[in-house]
Image (cartoon, rainbow, N blue to C red; front, side):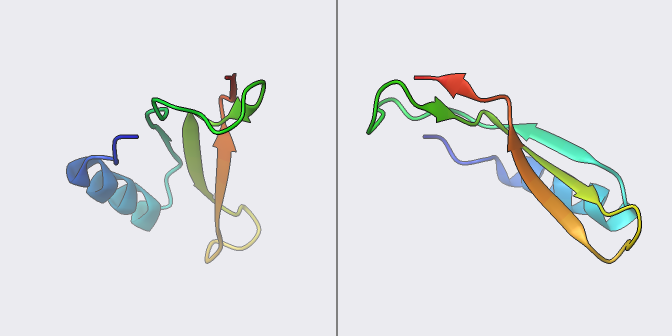
Length: 65
């Protein structure tokens, strides 16, 4: 699996500091430990609407492998 490029990481950090939402796609591994399992293809970061000091990280865009 390829790591996220450092420039993209810095961009996400800047978005978080501004309170903006961020969604970043990431690569899938070449080999999967289990078949017929869902793996995430994107992580999302957003600020909590009721408490701006909280950030949430979620996984989405799951693919079946």
